[in-house]
Length: 373
Ligand SMILES: [Zn+2]
Image 1 (spheres, rainbow, N blue to C red):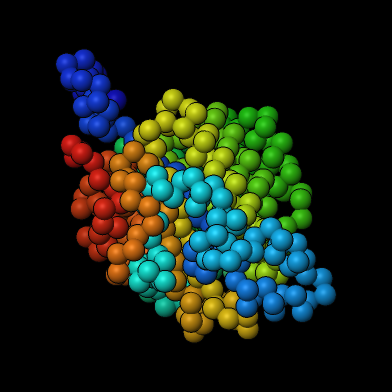
Image 2: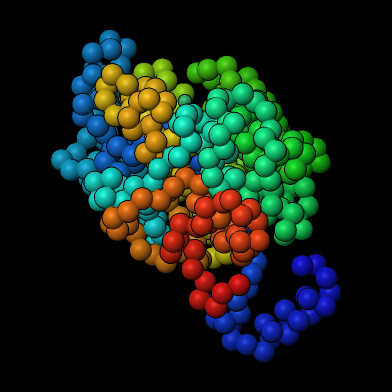
C-alpha cells in the first residue's frame, strides 16, 4: 500500500470525489482490541449482583458496603449504568453490544476449558484449538488474525502492538514472539519505541506488587498503552487487562467490582483519546470483550472452568466508523468467541476469507461498510 502508483490513484480518487464518498471508501482503518479478563455477563449487563454482595458481606475484610453505596440500584439497567457509566451511558448507544442472556442473545466460548489461554487463542485464531488446554506460556503454530493483519497491511514491527498485564497474552497473540511488538506482564516498551513516560510506567509496573505474581496492575498497563498510542500511533493495538480476574480468584467481590469500574474509566478515556487524535478519529474500531465467564453462584463465581456453569458466557462491545449504532442486541441467537478474529480483520478492511479456511465468520452486522472494501 506504500507503492507510489497506488498512492497516486488514491490521491486522484480523493480529489475527484466528494469528501463523504472518499471517507467511506478510504481503506485506512485502525483497530484497538481491549480484553477484560474473566468479566461475567452478570456484571456486564446487570451491574452489582446482590446474591454475591450478600455473600461477600460475610467476609470481615470486605468493603462491600462501600460498593453497594456506589453501584446498587433498583434495576439491572440502573445498576450497570452505575458500574459502567462510560460504556452504558455514553458509548453503547453509539455502537453494538452482544451477549445479554436476559434478551436471549448470547456469545459463547467453544473451547473445552474456559480458561484464559484457550480463550485468547480461540478469539484470535477464529476457532477453538483442541491442543490448547491450559495456560502454559507457549506459542501455538497458528497465524493469528493480529499476525495476519500485520503482514497483510505491510506494517512495520511497532505498528502492531500488544500491551498486556500477563505474559500469557504474548503467547496467545501470535505464532512467534517477534511477530510484532509485545509487552508482557512486567516488561517495558523496548527502545527505540519507548518514551520517558513509558519507561517511568514500566518501572512502576515492574515494582508495584500485583495481587498475584504473574500479573501487573491494569491501570499502569493502560497508562503505558495510552502513551504508546500518543507517541507511536499503531494501526493495531491489543490492550489486555487482567485485574478483574485477579480479584475474582481472590474471592473479593467488592474489589472485583472496583476493577470493573476502573475498566469502564479506561474504555471511556481510551475512546476519547482515539477521537482526539487525527490519525484515529472516525477511522478506528474499538472491540472490547472477555476471554471467559465465571461461575454464576456465590459458591463458584471466583473460579472458571468448563465444569462450572457460566464459564462459557461472554460478551462483545464494538464501536467505530463501520459499526452501525444499533446499541444492545435483543436479537435472539448465539454467536461464538471465534468470530472475533474475522470481525477484527473486517474492521481493518481485510477479507477474512483470504485468511484461514477454518475460522468462523464475523459477527454479523458489526462491521458494515457502505461502499465495501
Ligand atoms: Zn482466571
